[in-house]
Amino acid sequence: MQPQNLRLYPLVSGGADAYAADNRTTAWSTSMTQTGSPAAQENSPRPAAPAEGGRLMSLDALRGFDMFWIVGAGSLVHAMGHKSAITTFLSNQLEHVEWAGFHFYDLIFPMFVFITGVSMMFSMDKALAKHGRPGAIVRLGRRCALLVLLGLFYYGGFSNPWPGIRLTGVLQTFGVACFLGGSIYILWPRNPRAMVGAFLALVLGYWALMTFVPFPDLRLDKDSVAKLAAQVGSNDPAVLAKAVTARVHGVYEKGYNLANYTDFRYLPGKKQYGDGYWEAQGLFQMVVATSSCLLGILAGLWLRRRDTSDELKTLGLFCAGAVSVALGFAWGLQFPVVKKLWSPSFVLVAGGYSAMLLAFFYYIVEMRKCQRWCMPFVWIGMNPITIYLTYSIFPKVAERLAGGDVQRCLDHYVLKGSGGLFLALVELALVFLFVRFLYIRKVFIRL
Image (tube, rainbow, N blue to C red):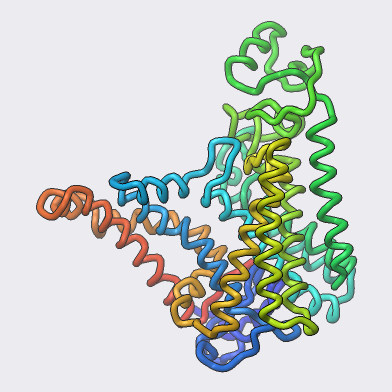
């Protein structure tokens, strides 16, 4: 049974109404991230700058490009192996940096938050006009709470007994960042100075906390914690922290910094990193991720300006991104670029690259009207949450279609390694078939 014409108005998108308007289609449309164009308008003339409440195909394409690297493209690159300097470089770029540094794969999540900030700026004006500030914040909070709850479910829900339940993660961080970023915009709509002020308060405040606030001189690794626990006769974080009298500050090492200590001491439940002592999306990081959303809102405000040419918008966005990247790496000399800390230097580097990519997609898709090439990315970008929650299914299906004897036969009779490459291609093809089916049928499942 399919619900016909079910409209749930968008939260932080430019609007999903256009996708639900056709009475012959199915549309589930509460959008945290949607600003795309319907298939019927794929080749129609359209202004580069979005209208009030408008949508940008380039933003959908960029979102899909972002998701593309975790729903099959990564497997394809890794299947190529390390047979050349190029494949080795690409494989390394599709792995997270262990601690300090920056790879392309470290850009995926912050760019998604950045893109959501761009989308959010368009949809919040509509929510403000219809519901006022209190109503807009309530709607925002309700949908972001759904994201947090979905994250809890995605990471196991209540399948494990307490304290084996993970309270933080990607979706929870995304929900918190969207709520805080959206709330700031609702309170000061169309006010770039307020957005810049909030951004600076977040990154500079976080820098000051991490640099100047002392914490117990305890390294959060298995051996150090076990040794201290044996001395005091307890594994309780409060007891262990109290037993350490020395204090340190201004250090940013793995498992040895204020953010990781705060998670160890105050974050309940299961912790994924550092032998179970801290989180990559911890208490501080969930809040500071809002700064990436604010950068996206600022980019959206810039693109919506009517007193600036599209050429200048693109150039300004690209140059601002390049400056941000340079400043981020320069700041990294003092506070390293660390994704697992969402350090201020990481915010600037990731935000800068995101702005540069947005400028490229905006120029090609909106200004040059070259849109056919990006449609596969648009298919993914219009159902991002759905793809994120289901992408782990596709490798299993691909294995049943092209694994086992099929893979071994290709490796033996065609070329060694070709079986794995074919398997990765099947996986990616399944992803594209799935998202294209959803797009054609206008089925958009979003939170």
